[in-house]
Amino acid sequence: MHVTDLEAAINWWRERSPSIDSVSAAPEVCALAEAYALLAWRRATDIEVDALSDQALGAWLSWYETTPDSPCIAICSTAQGDPLCKGCGRSFEEVQHWPVLGPFEKRLVWQRITQEGTAWRFNRYAERVLK
Image (tube, rainbow, N blue to C red; front, side, top):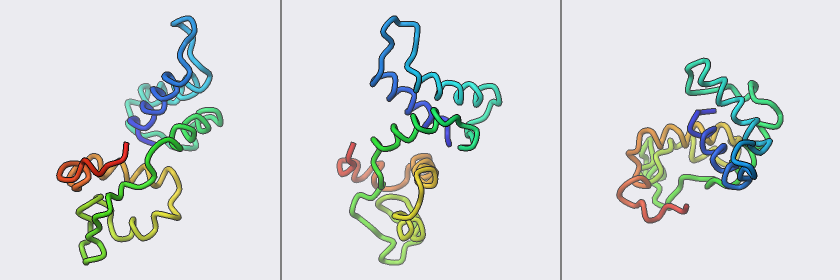
């Protein structure tokens, strides 16, 4: 799991369950913050899913359910033989197997295509992206 997903999940939970006294945090935030602290301590950008507590994993999965499932913008060039889709940035294999990928596999693909930023979903046709 990448640090940006962990940060997004923490921020989502902070908005969903704000502190009532400006000091304490919701249990989900605390669980995710422990994983975040471990990343900081290791000076790493990725954490293994197995390193998450059950509560942190549950909190992350709750956030994940609120994210768009597919990067598809309905302009697919893999069907025309391109190794990477110009529309979403996924490989032919990723497009083909997307329905059976798990949440962590999907987030790895999302991380890659976001970092590359070359797919049309990030520039030319950004208005097609569902938020």
